[in-house]
Amino acid sequence: LYSLYSNYILNRLRQLFPISLTSAETSKSTAGSMKGSSNRRRRKTGLPLPLPSLASAASFEGSSSIKSETCKIFDLLEDIIEQILLNLHCIEKNLGFWQSKAEGSNGRIAYFMICERGPSAFLDGTLHLVHDFLSDGSSIQKLYQSAYSYVSKRISVFSSLRYFLSTFLAKFYTEVETIGEDLMKDPENSLPSLLVSISDLFSELEASIGHLHANGQTDSDPLTFSKLQEVKSEGSQWTECETRDAINLIYENLHRLDCYLDVLISKHRKPRKLTLYWIPYSCGAFGISLFSLWLLRHSKFMGSPDLDNWARDAKDSTKIFWNDHVEQPIISIRDELFETFRKRQKGVMEREEVQLTADSLHRMLRAFSEQTVGKTLPESTSDQEMLEIVMARYEKEVMHPIQGLVGGELVRGLLIQVQKLKLDIEEAMLELDQILRANEINFAILAALPAFALVVLLGMVVRAWFKQ
Image (cartoon, rainbow, N blue to C red; front, side, top):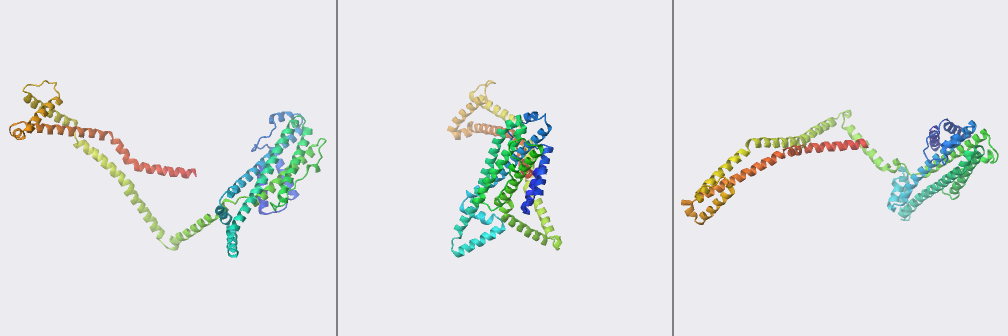
C-alpha cells in the first residue's frame, strides 16, 4: 500500500509540476517499493501467478538468502501484473468513452467539441466557428472534420496502448510460466534468466511505444528503459547484491512506464465530469447565486420582513391544506360511516319484525284459502300453495271487477298481495342490513386509505433518499 500510494502521489505531483525524474527520486521510490514488498506480502489484486506458492515456500527452506530474494521476485511479478492491469483498466475506460463519441451523430460530436470540453474550448470553438462562417461559409463541415480528427486520434492512441500492454502482459505470463518450473527446481540459475527475460520484455514494450512517436500520434517525451545487461549479463550465477540491483532496475522501469502512461493518458483522457457538464453546473451556480441574493434582499439582514411573512403564510397554507384535504375528509367519512351504522342498528328492520309480517300473511292466506275451498286446510300446507288458491280466486274476481269490489273478494285479494309485497321488501331490507354489517370493516379500511397512501408515499421518498 505504501508503494502504491506513494507512486500515485508522485505521479499526480509530476502532472501538476512537470519536472524531470532525478536519480534520487528514482532510488527513493524504488527503495520504498522494495521495502514495502519485502516487509509484507500484499493481497493479490490482479491475475494469479502461474507459480505454486506452497511448493515455492517448501523449495527454499534450505537457504534463507535464496528464499528472501525469491520472495522479492514474487512481489515484483505481482507488482508488474497489478500496475499493468490498472493501466489497462484506465485505458479501457477512456477508449470506451471516445468510441461512444465516435459512434454518435454529427450534431452530437459537434456539441461535444464546443460545449463539453470546458469554457476555454467553448470560447475557442465559438470563435473559430464564427470566423469560418464569415470567411467561406463552411464552418460546420470544418467543425465536423476537426471533431472526428480529435476523437480518432485519441481512439488510435488508446487502442495502440491497449494492444501494447496486452501483448506485454501475455508475453510476461508466458515467460513466467516457462521459467517457473525451473525456478522451483534451480532458483540460483533461474532467477537471473527470469529477470533478463522481464528486462527484454520492457525493451520490446519500449520499441512498440516508440512507434507512437514515429507516427506522430503523440508529442510527449519518448519512453526509455534501463537495460539489465548493463548490470549483469546472463550466464553465471548472480550474487545477492546483483539480484537486488536487477530487481531495483526493473522496479525503476516499471515506475518509468507508470509515469509515462500517466502523462500520456492525462493528455488524451476523457474530460472530467465537471468539464463535461460545466454548462449545467454554471447555470445552476448562477441560479443559486441569484436565488441567494434574492433571499438576502428579502431577509432580516436587509431589514425586510418578507421571509418571515412568507414562512408564516406557507405554514398556514400547509395547515389549511392538511385540514381541508386530508384530516377533515377522513374524519368526515369515518363519522358518516359509523353514524350510519349506529342509526342503522337502531331504526332498521329487525328479524322479529319480518317474522311478525310473515306470520300475519300466513294467517291471512289460511283464512282466505279455507273460506274459498270451504274446508279446513292441514297444518302442512305451505304459503305458496295457499297463495296459488288466492291468485286463482283473484283472477276470477278480476273478470267482474265491479261485482268483485261490491260483493266479492277482490279487495281482500288485493290486501293479501300488498301484505306479500311488504314481506318481500322487509326481507330484502334485512338481507341488505346483513351485507352492510358484514362489510363494516371494509368501509373502515376504506376511510383510512388516504392516510395509508400518504404514509406509503412518504416511506418511499425516505427510502429513495437513504439509498442515494
